[in-house]
Image (cartoon, rainbow, N blue to C red; front, side, top):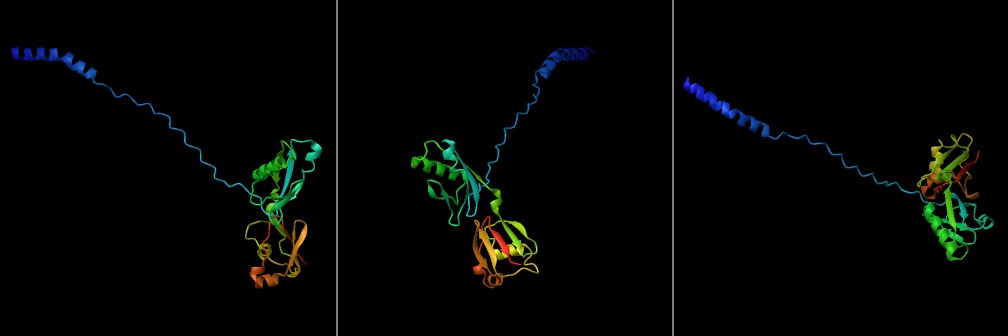
Length: 208
């Protein structure tokens, strides 16, 4: 009996200490999620269209009296040699340049030649010049999207070939409003090296 009472007193004395130790054990503190760092926006690697022979564009000038600007506010066509004729400047290289690059070159030329002091040039490329049109004696006359490897015979092939009344002779390519040449489709098929490449804005007319 005395032994049991002693054990009870020991346990009773130790209980507060054990309780204190239990309370002193640190509890895990939940970690608040941190906001993720914003992802870097992808870089736009798109290419910018450049002028090519056959392209047509409009040019507008400002920064000078309107009567002088009007002499430049015209529609221009890039020639087969890649140049364009600008009033008071003459021939300028245009092929291979973007619209903004050509704008800066025209502005610099006008200033350096002391034509105008503070000109501003704006160029708008006509989107329709990225096509060629095929008409006349083909089965499916249409406007075709231009590509660098588009030839006369392949363009006619894309129109399902000659119609029942279409003639393989005297096929005309009209470029910049003028007849560029007349071709015989049969001869081109025999000798592909003579098959002319088409340029944006070309018109192909097949005789019927």
